[in-house]
Image (cartoon, rainbow, N blue to C red; front, side):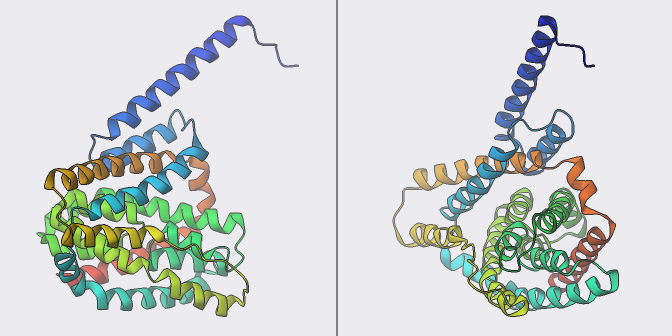
Length: 317
């Protein structure tokens, strides 16, 4: 029989919870001034030690905060320059999306990975990580387990990419254009792409963001193909409207005489909120999520990620 809690036990528990919340909020506020990789690391450290106190809220807030951050960054970009930067990676984006999906299907059969889980991982690798998975999952009738496994796999690889890509780029002497193109195609989620680009430089950020959001538009044709493959009817597709607002922000910054103080302030706030977003995303990691990934789906995700990373690097260098 469990011993009833005493008043002292309740006091200790309350003190522990208060200390836990204070540490969480100190790290959350501190992440606003931290570099993207550091902010992500802080979030992961919180998740694996004291645990994130608001798991559901963190997930919801990070989703919308990321979208707002990306739109805000659009006010610091010139449409003509962005199109010129993104043009170089357009063709390879198309080839990489189709290529990854085909290779993913073949590898999933060799590794005997659950077809739906493999399809979700391939979609996330080919296009834009969690957004693609979230859009495709209801269309192919993937259950919560398939979706969580795919998201966990992509999340783990995203965290690794955000840390190692900038140092690799510097070691190889990649230009801002080269790194931006490489990061946009080889890293899954928009948050990690933007974070890696921001860590490497201003031009890399613009190139990476433009190509990544262009790549994200492939969610629409992928959704249509998914309906045909899995013969799903009447399924709604999650439309990434923030991409449209990002483009409108660039158009406004290019053609409307917005005072530099205003646009500069918006971009600065967007950068701060991006770091906070990465902190919140880091808080979503858990040991249970890592265990749920399992060996085979993780191997599939790693192989696809390594393939697209190496091939893209060879093309841009």
